Image 1 (cartoon, rainbow, N blue to C red):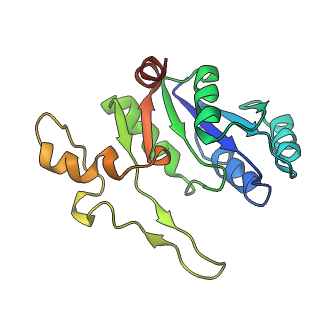
Image 2: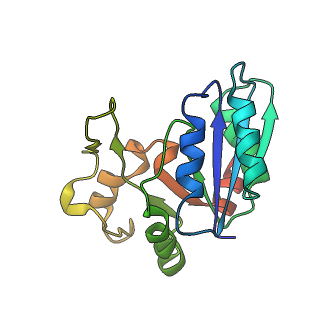
Length: 176
């Protein structure tokens, strides 16, 4: 399996179904979704279970509330993909984005792939592209050994977990 999405979820009933549907509707299927209900007190758990019943790629778990980090760490122990993507439950993927990312993961085999994002606002307002990645660098593959200055611009210093697709064995060995 190429990719495991690991999603911590705490009281995100208004968002979690959209997040899951945006992943499950991608024209690509070599992935699993490991979603951890981190002790939600709203309808989050019920919504997760309903989606999981309709799609075997969703593997739901529940734990007592311990925070995002603990939920991600637990999810990492359950992940089976070559790569792990820590997506937040209020995020969603652009339609048709996953096949392009999968192609990069399979062809280039990076240790870490930093993805860009758009910020969504109220309904009717167009999404706003991130300015963390200069437009000239969009779609660029950067080897930190060859171009450390560019890598610094794109690096994890400005990248929360949901911007990184990482080799599972590297993340897991670091977390263990």
